[in-house]
Amino acid sequence: MPIPDSSARIPSLRWLNTLVVVTLMTVTVAIAYLGYYYVGAGNRSQVTWFAPELDCRPLDERCFTALGRFGEMQTQWDYQKGQLSVEMVLTGLKAEKVKMQLEETGSRWRQAAMTLDAVSAGHYRGTFDIPLCETNTHRARGSLVVTTPRGLLGSWYDLSLPCH
Image (cartoon, rainbow, N blue to C red; front, side, top):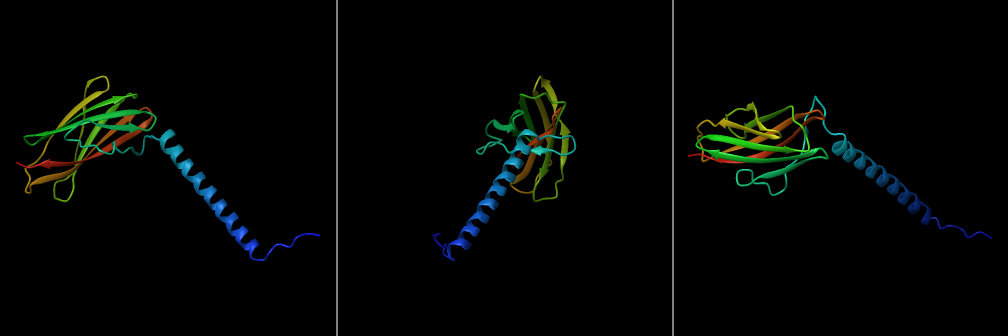
């Protein structure tokens, strides 16, 4: 003789099955996104952005940025006497071109962009003249975009430039 199921147990099993299916779909979408971003990243029309290491202080020390599975970018920013310079070393990738863009946040100063000069294989350098400032500091975001055979790969750095 079969044992009857309680009526309270069947709806809870259906609810549990629904939650399991939704969780599996969410995990599948997350894995697909990460796979595309880190394995298939880089195309010619849009920059794939990679965050620098967590404790990056660009004006004080060399910062490292992992460019997915493609390579690594090391940058050192320096600000002296109204000039902001950046030195970048690229490993694991060959760059066709490296562009730097500087955009001040919160004021009237606009964007400025330039192509970095190749010093040696994988080593690039460039310098911006910063206009006189009206406050104690310039708050700016410097970004580097590397054009590679794999596509456009980039990173950004938040800078607080002292005014003298």
